[in-house]
Image 1 (tube, helix red, strand yellow):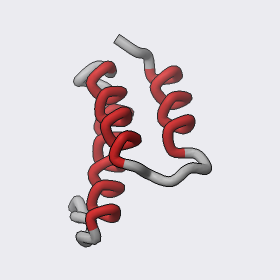
Image 2 (tube, one colour; image 1 turned 180 degrees about the horizontal axis):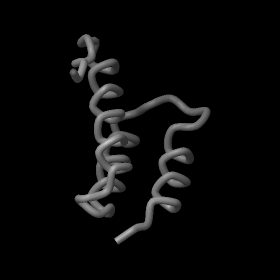
Image 3 (tube, one colour; image 1 turned 90 degrees about the vertical axis):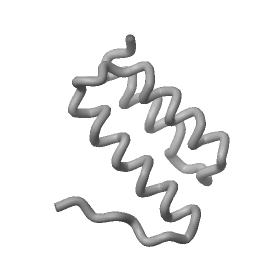
Image 4 (cartoon, one colour; image 1 turned 90 degrees about the horizontal axis):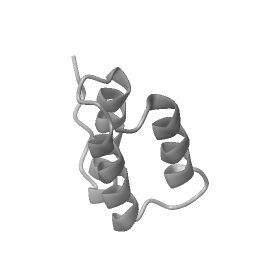
Length: 65
């Protein structure tokens, strides 16, 4: 299990200053799997990843209410 500080650092490393590739998406999903299911950060990053996937596929992002 990865803690939130390490997850945040790895997330930034994945997405900072580089283009989002299919491999980046796979790596990000794997990172989320390493986090506690109860983590609020995991939920936030999961939503961010879904938005990134939507953008890369040309779909409009789903908005949460």
